[in-house]
Image 1 (cartoon, rainbow, N blue to C red):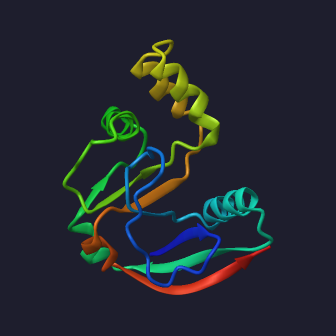
Image 2 (cartoon, rainbow, N blue to C red):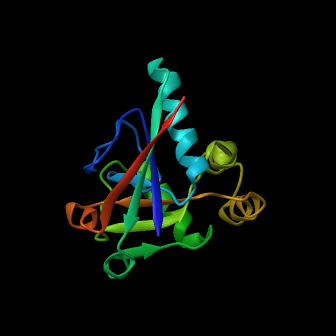
Length: 159
């Protein structure tokens, strides 16, 4: 399986990153199976940093090794929502999985999340809303051990 990571630099040796803000799956190294999504992530960073170029880093995943250490959410579900909200709302939230795979709660659905967080939308309502969107996936490498499943293949420049 090929995975992509959008960045303003070539990332030959991924590392676990402690984010400055709370993210869907917490700290680690985020990838996706969508080249387009990774390109968007790179372009967002390019714009913030006022850079003219960025990269979509390409990796090969050792699926057999990864499968042994992965928590997988194939679609928005109550368990996925609880996991994402725990990561977003509790900076001290911890879990024992090395890899997390599931949907990205991207920019289009943040408004629905905000309604849920404020109590204006209940859990069932939010999940129904999310099923309307075609959500892209993400895979988080949460531990150093998980990074051993990832091999750098290439970096494609984005201008």
